[in-house]
Length: 370
Image (cartoon, rainbow, N blue to C red; front, side, top):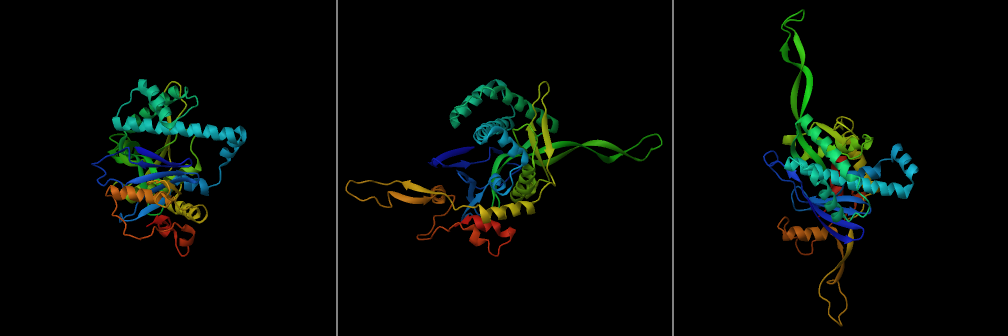
């Protein structure tokens, strides 16, 4: 769930909240979060552990995009279509992916979805996001993709714990986790059953057993498989991020899910990414981002106050303002934060200076503004 505001043509901010979290499983609601889109990438703003400081951190996707080489398959794809056409296709694919995420979340929270309502969902989404291009092919595709997800939910007896939950790590990054759920897997093993006859009588017998585990699932709308950056996002960033906040429901296994381009029987890709990356690798990417790509919090000209004929324009009417000042004022009004004492300055975001003498475990301090 989000509420968006635009500050300039190149920067927007929205309040983001989990679309769903199970209050009996998750007893502590996540801290309030704002998500900021800038020309340099996506950032999250939240509260420190003590809830007296504002923390400004890059998103997982922004970190990975800046610190990873463009994969060969993506380079080849850009070469095939040309830059402008490729960017257009990429934008439209991202728009559809967001709609698919929203529709899956609605299905999970309401536990049902009327396929006949999909055209209305698409039109509402187009109007909200001011999409002017042709989306007529989305109708059939979204129906297929939701049926594929429904089959997945049946196959693994999915019970959601949290959906689209935005979190910020003490290590200095943030992200929205698509789905944490209980899933049932049929596992082969020796579960105490013995052979009752024959030459193996009395010996352990290998059988199947249904095992329910808490897992983390990241959705992708593309139908061409998953890539190395997905392994890093899931196993290096998102799994530690969830476990940092909710250790009582810790996740050991992480998966990517995407629909297949099926014709007669709903089908999907479900690939385990556990063990294919690590938090150490993720923190190396974060450290590189802090040194080379991190930018100060976004500022803009805030125009407000009373104009009077004959009076000069002053700072009460026009002032350069940090987006963090705007968020702090909102949270002070809402009682989320205590008002800052008079003349207490806002700390400057200087990650390159703060790096001196820090190791990866201290990276979070690089993104903190007091």
